Length: 326
Image: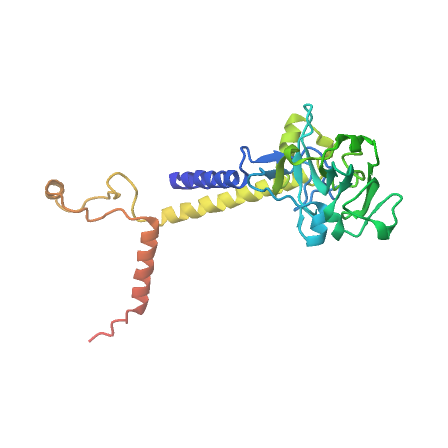
């Protein structure tokens, strides 16, 4: 039993150590509190849903961020869609946001215009007042519109005309958006944040999804409970029951092995049985044996050693020819 407990603690320690090494921050995960990244009303593996725990990575661990537009060109995708998922700070004491960077927009001070080099490989975009053949991703002035964004084929635009609110920030960064059907606008035009997300605003990238587990925190804190997908809690219950059954089987197997073991792990390494013969003589012999430091005739052996010896003995018995007599 002690060996099992030590092994379990060691495994848990290794898992958390590995998560910290992968993440670069402690605690290495964050609970998703809204459904802005969901792809349906039900929780799905591989998609960031309400109540999921996401293992995050610092930019020291993952300093290459791929936008949706870049992912579309290269085929790179994370969590069911092109591009990475980032966690960025909004400031003002507001909660961080976990959304997808769609396109990087660079402000050009010399020309007082905007550029988006990644749009060279993305066919679904336009600028108001500019003919398709005259589009230049290195010189954008006007309302920029992107089409066919994500699995919902969204259309979203950004006002980059002179003296617009975003223009006046003159801050380069990502235009960001959630994946869900409730997010048909960029964060920068939907009231989530009033500027593009610069690199110094990005806190983490999303690394791994641990499904459903964060739903328990939302339940205990009574926060956004109505947004928890209906299959998350049942999934937790099923996994818990399966884990308990596995543990029962493991302990039953260990108990069976222990029952087949001929020696006990007591202090002497041998389970004493009834003595046969002259009690006085046996006592003298045992005393003499102890004084002379003779080796214990019945040393303690491990379960693994006993199983190997038992297997060898059975094999020897099967191979031995029966005595045919004289």
